[in-house]
Picture (cartoon, helix red, strand yellow):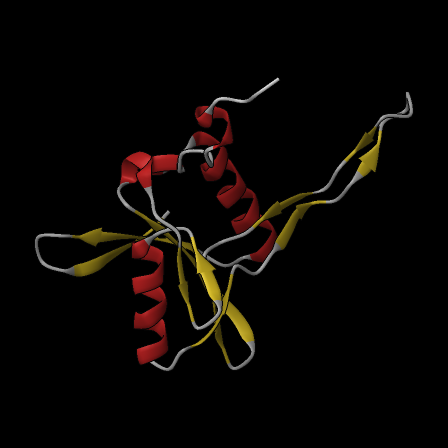
Length: 132
């Protein structure tokens, strides 16, 4: 049995983004890689794709195990070693899904730090940042 070339091709990228590697970090889009460069140029204390647990794993009375839930923002910004905010880069507000919005709300509640959405303004070639 042979597979068609369509079955062998890699899956299409979500939201038509293109993977990028910069300084050994894998970024989901060109916009995310550009934001990384901006943070690096500003010499901010930040981490890339840091995972935050927003719901612990638990067991139901019937024995079913429910896995933990994590939120992984694009960037975590620190000041004096303390989490200051997290940033998610988006091509536009359209790419903000209901599921990601919910994870962001759980994160803000548990970690008491704002989620910043950074979108790229192609007309002015700058990032626009807004709190979720």
